[in-house]
Amino acid sequence: MDGNDLLGMPGMELGPLRLSESLFGSLAVSLLLVGLAALLGLRLRAAPGPWQTAVEGLVGAAESAVRVLVEDQAPRVLPFVATLWVFLLCANLVGLVPGLESPTRDLSVTAALAVLVFFSVHWFGIRASGWRAYLRHYLQPSPLMLPFHLVSEFTRTLALAVRLFGNIMSLELTALLVLTVAGLLVPVPILLLHVIEAVVQAYIFGMLALVYIAGGMQAHEQTHGEGG
Image (cartoon, rainbow, N blue to C red; front, side, top):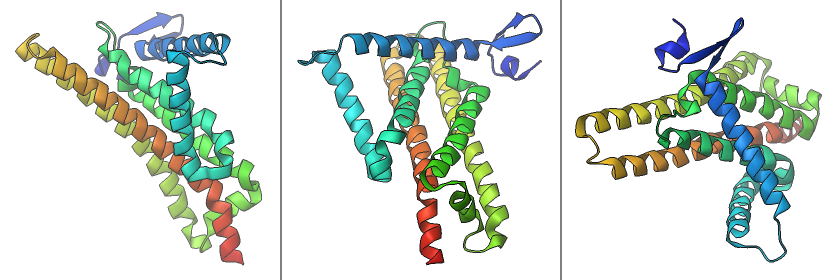
């Protein structure tokens, strides 16, 4: 019995590979978002309609949040962080569809997202300052701090994965237990709780990723300041 079986996530055998339901869910959400983005891109108008206005408002809000932390680097960081927000929101809400489960209730999915954030932090940090200056900040204020910096990188990545997984898993289990005990007497409050929690968890994960990226991009400034 593997991890997906333990979590109630049925899999599918494809030759020597075992593909989990969470993988299909993640791919379906990604393809849906790509299709919607392409459709919206083809329907852009100088005089925006309601849908275009709503999307532009969301993009503007995301850009404002990103610009607060990274300022001039916002155009570079915004596509990644905004995509992360949108994907997580949609993936968290998939569980509202009868018969489907949120991909983010699978630890393998949240771990993959956390690893993606881990590499993005170093990618943006190196692009902002160069690899020499970026790696030098791990030795500040003393080379003795290197092991602590490395442990911090590992623990915050692990925390990102476990936090999202735990919250979405507990939310869906709570909803299932309540509906099992109370039947359909209280579906609306449960659905509202699911929507609110899905939005909050997507926002928190994206904001933590943004904070980590901003810290990586500003590390070289701290190094230069201490050196000066």
